[in-house]
Structure formats: structure tokens, C-alpha cells
Amino acid sequence: MKRIFLSIAAAVTLLLGGCIKNEQVVFQDAQIEFDAAAWNANALGVTYPILTRVPALGAATSTAAPSITRTSGTFTVRVNLIGGQKSTATTFSYKVASESTAIAGTHYAAFSGTGTIPANSSFATIPVTILNPGPGVGSVTLVLELLSGNGLTAATNYNKVGLSIALP
Image 1: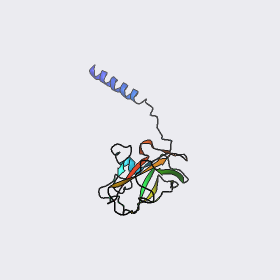
Image 2: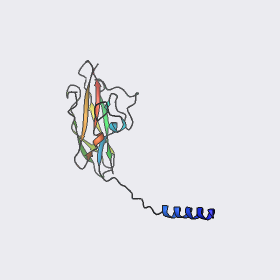
Image 3: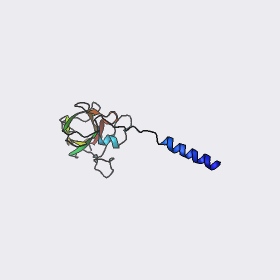
Image 4: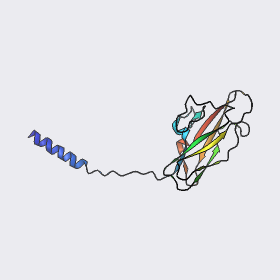
């Protein structure tokens, strides 16, 4: 009797468990985010990370990467496309956020404010050129912010990244 009951219970479980239809969830939007913001924790008191080292593409900032200083020259910050790739090149906009303490023309070269994600790609880069104003004290922060537009939405949690430029 016990064996029959267990067999019936097992059969009912298998038959009823196989009837669940899984709905496939597909992300249809197109968003952009800073790669460094997705890999690094937010700094204390702000909603974005502040990097002190040159961001490594596709990874958390490594202690082996060089520090961002007044002599860093040019490096790139990667922007990720979240969602399906586009068959044509897509432009996006960005700006220097109001929280920045770095001064254009003194600490960094002015930005164009636009970038391009190539066709059939999920990545773009923004070149950052650090200028050498001469020795100073402390550091300044350059905060970049992605803007929504042209069919792309800036990801709410990853649309800003800070770059701390050491002046000594």
C-alpha cells in the first residue's frame, strides 16, 4: 500500500510539474552605461565611483594600473551598450557634470560631448586627455555623465563616473 501511494504521488508530481510554461523575458530597450561605474563601488557620499587609477577596460580598477595624475596624458573610458546591437552606428551624448572640480583647459582638454557606438558593437570609448598644469596640492575630480537621447537611455545607476586627478 505504501509503495502504491508513493508511486502515485511521484507520478502526479511529474505530470503537474511539467505543465509550467516559462515566459521568455527579452530586454528590448537600449541603454548606455560607463563600464567603470558598473565594475566599481560608489564613492562615499555620491552616487558614482571615483577612480584614482586609469580604468582598465572590462574590469575593476586594478592596483597595477597607473594612478591618474597630472602627467597621465590620454586614456579612454569605455561606454557599454545594454541591449541588442544596432546595425548602424549610434551616437550618444555626454557632459562634464556640475560636481566636477577639475577645470577645462587647465586640468583636462575639453570634450566633444558626443561619442559613437560602431555598427554591430556593444562598446564605445571616450578619450580623456589630462593636462599638466604644473605641480599643485591635493587632487581635483573630473565627473563625466552620460545623457539620454538618440534612442538611448542613460542607465540610472551607472551614468556617471568620477576621475580623481592627483596634482602633486
